Image 1 (cartoon, rainbow over the protein chains, first blue to last red):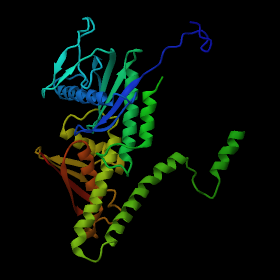
Image 2: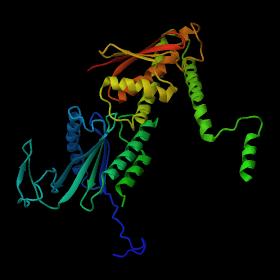
Image 3: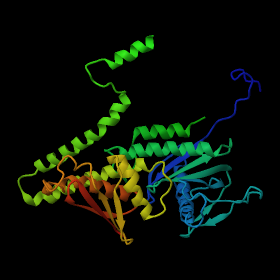
Image 4: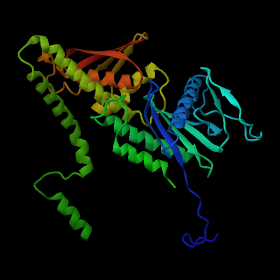
Length: 194
Length: 184
């Protein structure tokens, strides 16, 4: 399509929709979780919580491999194609197989939920662990565009800078939930870059 | 022509050496910290009644202040540094980058027994140089080390290492900080 504004060159879709950003302490409890849209908050809590396992695994694997063991950025944790299940999110089959009919799923404590395939969403999670063992997890909705590693890295850098500023605030006690307006602004700017 | 005029105007002026704003800020900030530190110590010790038993409380307050500051500082300093390999790596960071960032010099000597005890020796500790250069005022020296002990403890705690930091001084302005790692 001829785009008059850019003189005829096609404008690249430069759109990164972070749907959830989380800051987790080294004791593995969240200091800050924010998501867009505001519904389905519980689902994102679960998402972030399950990503922690992958983060720990990557951290402990660092001792064994020699490549990239000094990196703070952990990269793609794992992509998921998930059915929107109430109330528990579950991983499903790879895209090649057809979606299964609704099935009951047993959860550890004996409760049963029905999975209802509603919508497919491709969500990728990225992790980053600072030297002070604080973990950042960003969940990206990857259904609209593919994006480059560098964009994610720059998002994490911004996040780390904002977190450092919160940490240096003398009125902030480490370990408390983050309630800074400036921090909120930085996060919302990251979640609506479009 | 215009350029020369501007330069000559800069060079004049009451005999003061004109300094770029950024440079001035860099030159003054160490003195600011030293003065503030001295005043904090003086304030805390004056605010107790003439009661010797409270000496421990004052030192603890100073150490607590240093702890919180150390946590924030280390967050800033470790932002761009690759992940630490082990405890020794962390201690080397404290001796080099951390000390240089705060006191504009590195620790002169680091010793360890490889079992969790480290001794950091600074032969010209920044906060003691203005006090004396020998044995005078020795009894006041520990007050000036409490904040820095807290600084180190806070930095280590934020990096995931629990420790106890003490300091001793035998000849001003040299002093030694002893770090004992606490293993759970």
